[in-house]
Image (cartoon, rainbow, N blue to C red; front, side):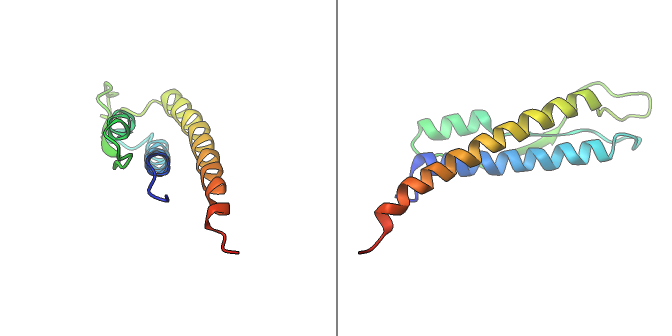
Length: 113
């Protein structure tokens, strides 16, 4: 029961969103570092395919942004990072609430009289 597709998918989503939050924080911290390339994290497409295949387990993929660079070779865009951060925070809150509800619905089944 604890290995349900929905719990696996929500756990994978939380891991991916956490990795994205870390990447965003690193990007913002390095906004003035010459030659720094913004980090990206993707997992949504792989997660959708994994859920359809009956697993729900994926590992986030980390990469580098292909956005154009500034004269110093840095390609961090603060506006993009702010939007990514806000979106990621909302998605993380939603996923954590969903997994909490999923687990709460399982607890009565685990109770022993």
